[in-house]
Length: 144
Image (cartoon, rainbow, N blue to C red; front, side):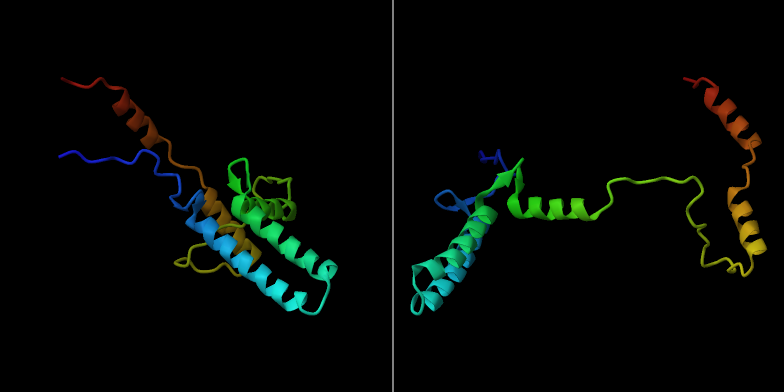
C-alpha cells in the first residue's frame, strides 16, 4: 500500500480560495469592526465623517492579513521594529563586571573581606598536574 507524503509542510493550508484560516479570521474580525463603525456612523453623519475611520481600520486589517516583509508577517515586523527602537543598539562588555554567583548552599558573605574571599575561591587556579596526566593518556595510540 502506498501513502502520499506531504512535500511542503511549512505552508499553511488554504481554507477559502487563496485565504488561510489565520487570514480569514483576521479579515472577518476587521470586517466586523468596520461594519459596526459604518452602521453606527452612517445613520447620523455624511460620507466624509465615517469614511476615514472605516478606511483606516480596513487598511490596517488588510495589511495585517496579507502583507509580508522579507518573509515576516506585518504584525511581527511591527513588533520587531518596536523592540529594535526600544532596546539599546550598543552593548558594552566589561571584564569582571558581573556579580559573583553565590550558591544557596554557601553562607552569604556579610563583609567586603568575606566577599573578596568568596571571589578568590571561585577564581582559584586549577591543579594542572591532573590535566598533564590526562593528555598523556589521550596521546597514546589505541590498541587493536
